[in-house]
Image (cartoon, rainbow, N blue to C red; front, side, top):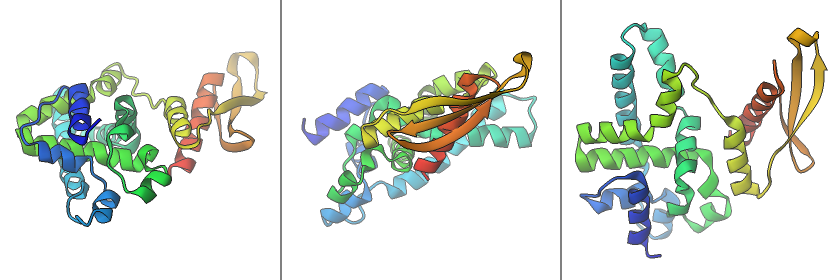
Length: 231
C-alpha cells in the first residue's frame, strides 16, 4: 500500500476528512524518519506540541460544561486522568496506530511502533493536524468522538484503566509474548480477603499487586508492570 493510501486508511478509520493532506502526513512522520531522509524539520514534534494544548483545552471545556458541580481541584484531576499517556495509548492501540507511522530504521528495530510514549505523542500530533486543518469547533467534535468510550466510563462513575489489556497489547507487539498472571497469596477472613498477584513474561516477574478480588489484584500487577516496562 502506498503512503497516501495508508494515511487515507487511517483517516477513514477515524472518520476524518483531509483538507490539507500534508498536515496528517507530518503528524504520522517521526523525527527519526525525517532525519534519515535529510528533512529534519518535517516531522510531528511541533504538531504534538500544538495537539497537546488543543486536547487539554477541549477536555477542560468538556469537563467544565458537563460537570458544573465539581470544584477546580476535582476537574484538574479528571482532566489529568483523561489526557494521560494510558488514555492516549489505549486510543492508539484501538486504531492500530503503529501500522501507520513513518519511522527511521533504528526506531523500527527498537520497537518504536509499539512504544507507548511515541504512540501517545502521535495521537496528540494528529489532533494538532486536525485543528490546523479544520479549526477548533470541528476538531472539538472529533476529539470528543475519539474519546467517547473513555468519557462514557467517566460519566458512569467508573473511569477504568484496563492495564491488563494495555499490557497485553504492548507485550505482544514489543516482545511477541502474552503476560501470565498468578495469584500468589490470599489473606484475611472469607468476607474480607486480600489477594496478591504477580504478572510474568516468560520466566521473569515484571509486576506485582494486591486487591480485594483476584481481578483487582491482577489489574494492580498489570499497572505496576506497565509503569515499569514503559518508563
